[in-house]
Length: 241
Length: 241
Image (cartoon, rainbow over all chains, first blue to last red; front, side, top):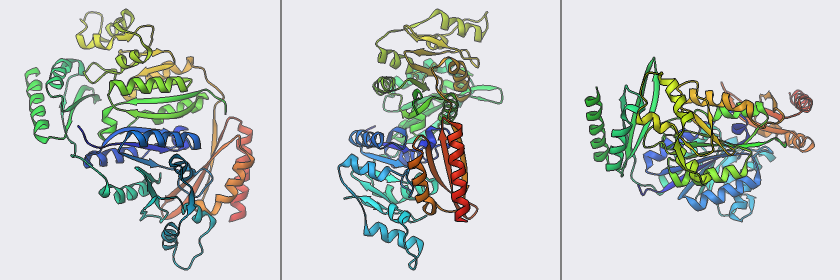
């Protein structure tokens, strides 16, 4: 597959400490697959300025798109905007467009607090990402999309971002359930993978109500080839039965 | 904190494609925190030999311990053992101890298949990790612990591995719920974090049945200091109310 590639960078001590179960990667992975963008890495790192700077630089250089989640709120542990700005060698300032987005969210009569203004600090040259849930915007700088960690807001920001991205051929997938262990079908699977190298053929064992079985998943950008592979797998399964 | 550090490497196309929700990182993070091992990175990568080799080398050099999950079954997409061996510059062979573990699991009278023997291929110099669920062992080479992706087996292998590891002071955590948004408490929080730099103080907004609130989590290796911080937070909360 020669689709554009992507990486996700999850920024948050709460994931690494075991307090919080990461909740955005699965959603992002599904959406990118449908958009024909090949997610190649998910990296979870702590709220540590130098670590964020290094990771943003490495992933931004290696992939077409980078998506970050976490660390853009108003408190002392929200350091993503400053770190991403450093990664691109630019400054950060309270921007009028971000301030206006926050003012619209709190209502026209109310005064913005220091905490609001902290969320209006945007790296120089970045474009805002709309947040229809709570107002505080994300931003895009270079190929890096900086989004919130709160799942409902992450989803809303991704909705705002995805339509404008360079995408590729959607990945189609289909799967077949075998009620035998992986070992029984390893050899024909290997042969099939060898003759259809344009497909990704994965084998996932399961244990379900006393049955040891295997789900075979076929993925590719050509739906006709995926169908051919599934038919061949069905023939293997029926011959084995 | 000067506890030993760790990284987790999740190997699996199925996570990156959005088919499967990653299920082992949360468990590992919780167990490592209790053991006083500081999990500093989680990285999810595809079933790609060169990518696995590079990631194993990078994480092994940077951390006290590395834990991998996935890619040690019998099928063509299970390439972790070969890639980890390459990362350490050693060969892979069917080992007698691994063969014996599989023979014990399938029963003494049965012949091991090629698929079983593939799971007995272990890098030269590695120590086996016991798998009480299905027999097929994991292994440790250098500071890298190679374990299964199937959650029940991952848990069993981690149980086998953790007691022998270099560990540190267990991390204690406590938290306090504020029924106000993050912005209202950002300033006193920042002050508290500044005067107690030995603690990690995290702020996590929530939206629960119409209430916008914030959970403040305090983590550290000295339980007395964590208690002091929680008392100060309670005073901040009561003064605000």
